[in-house]
Amino acid sequence: MTLIDGNAIAQEVLAEVKQRAAALAAGTGAGDGDAAGVVPHAVFVRVGDDPASVSYVAKKQRVAAECGMRSTLVLFPENVSRDELLARLDALNADPAVHGILVQAPLPRHLDETEVFNRISPAKDVDGFTSLNVGRLVQEQPGAFAPCTPAGIVELLRRSGVVTAGKRVVVVGRSLIVGKPAALLLLARGADATVTVCHSRTADLGAVTREADILVAAIGKPRLITADMVKEGAVVIDVGINRVPDPSRKSGHRLVGDVDFDAVAPKCSFITPVPGGVGPMTVAMLMRNTVAAAERAVGVFGA
Amino acid sequence: MTLIDGNAIAQEVLAEVKQRAAALAAGTGAGDGDAAGVVPHAVFVRVGDDPASVSYVAKKQRVAAECGMRSTLVLFPENVSRDELLARLDALNADPAVHGILVQAPLPRHLDETEVFNRISPAKDVDGFTSLNVGRLVQEQPGAFAPCTPAGIVELLRRSGVVTAGKRVVVVGRSLIVGKPAALLLLARGADATVTVCHSRTADLGAVTREADILVAAIGKPRLITADMVKEGAVVIDVGINRVPDPSRKSGHRLVGDVDFDAVAPKCSFITPVPGGVGPMTVAMLMRNTVAAAERAVGVFGA
Image (tube, rainbow over all chains, first blue to last red; front, side, top):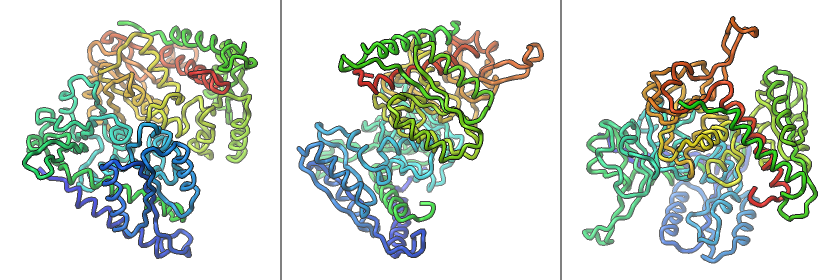
């Protein structure tokens, strides 16, 4: 069994991002050869003070800085009006000094997430959540920004040497942010997997997951995937990040995935841990999307 | 074994479309209660004289007329320039008297189909091929125009009383026009199937198709699906329309599906024939999308 080290692979990705950001800053990465330096710039929009959102955004800003990128936090109170939020997004869309825009989910109930995410210019939609970018993903158009977690899963598999072509992939979970785009990326030409998507309405989930050469668990239920649901020798990617009580910890809790790691790991050829698996890749792919957005903005060839 | 009669079900759909078109024409379907009558109007754009395209577009115009809708054929020579074609689409997008626009595929090689289809206003994209509408389909947004063939498949199943929730659906083919959107529609909330997509790179296709409670064949290879690939009691939807030589016919050929009908049909609970299965549904769903586009244009509630 090989443990897939998400932290190490994320560092590889981030080292490449840092290099690309440095080339942009030096003006040497630009398509026309004589552009002034441009520092990639991401704007993170946070509404309210949800502790998880505060921590995620802070992490993203820290990693952006480590990559030599600029980031700005735009903070709105919990009760911000729809119009004010959308007007700010319009201004950010129009600002040539902004390359990537991310609105941190979840938003307060009075705001329509679909409407808000879709207000972001597709060229700056580094989270890949706009309808246009999702459609481009389905259509396998080059240059669509893929959502960061699914893109991170594909990158983890690729850099671990896991072949997906012709393999049975089973994705458990049909969310718009993970399950569906992960299935689409693994089905696309180049990845070429035979992909099955399961969800809460699937009859006999274990019978389906046991078919998987590569199992992607993205349900959000702690340790739902037990050893009997996994084929001997399977590759298991655990997207879940669930907080469970643990009196032995000072914090009183710990993070576990959607997979019963201790029982499942011995059966696997490869498995990702939680934490330290998919999580760091999500942030790394966000940085890669942001540097790509900046490259396109200044006309780097092939970006 | 029950034969699913696509012609009869298409007639049901078309009867409903005709009623909605008549309500629009009478002005009684309009949201504000006092709108003048509007006749739904589809524009079909054909480039060149490919015989299949000529025949498809003629058929669509005939059915539109039968539904009480207006249609216009815009015809370009094979060598039309990209700019001229796009300029015409822009004009049609801007014309309030046009509710639906369809560019008949395939286009000549010098034109980029993705670019051309994406030039159509999403509000008039009755084929459902624009990236924006595809993204909305993935995101299960109400009001996205679903591509006509996959929407027709879902409608055939629904009106035949086939339950999809919790069932194993296997879609063979990952095209942008049929395979992928069919998988997405059947996976969506409401349909709730457990969906697998196979394709040319799938290892042991038969092993996968035998898992299917509902098998959708959309490969474009005559009689690829043989009896040994189908589970006893399965529902089989055959999307293929393949021309094979037949010296016994005056034309010298006949149409067969992707399924070896004679051998497979006895094993099925339900099966669609070719012709007379999915084919008529594609046209019917196009008409339904067109009347819906017209209803939205005049502000009919819920359209």
